[in-house]
Image 1 (spheres, rainbow, N blue to C red):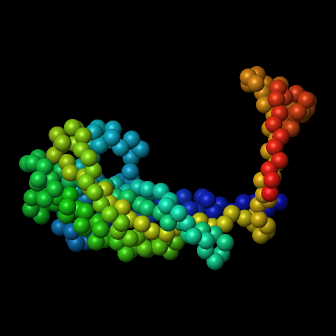
Image 2: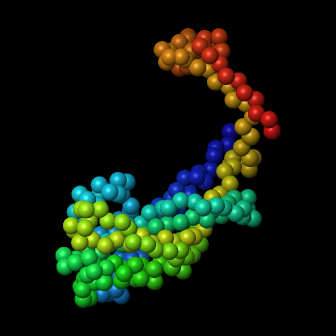
Image 3: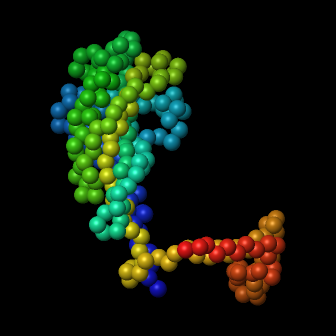
Length: 225
């Protein structure tokens, strides 16, 4: 028997690599003293964004990268897809002076959110981040992130930036070159409620299916092709 190639897993790896490569490019620019400041927080987008911003001791200047989803796809000449997708970057500044200083900055050592945004766009737009699978990132827009009370008290200013690009999704095949057979028949045995006993051969180890005679209900659907 052939085995499935990991095309889907490969795409996940590429998505993760893009997030990390975006952050690495920002860090490299700061480390090379191209920006005049150092990033104090660089991370991927946290799962619970609101709770993270309110409670986590993140420090500005900060940036978080995230995958923002697929918008469509086109077929490539190898039978796979080139997916149009978006990646997001949120940059954050902070100032104890006032909200205007958080946006505008205060000297070279305290950049504002506008400067963070422009630097990030300048570094990432048009770059493939050194990833062969990635089409160039294209700047697609930016907007201020709404602040809750905890962020206002911190003197924070956040801007969300979107970049569009293309990522490959390979056709999923069997290693010997055969395509996966079409889904033609759905056959299911149901245990209602789940008390067990749905088994075609109780002497054999494990559960043997189909087990129409032992099932509480059975569904059989043949799909038109």
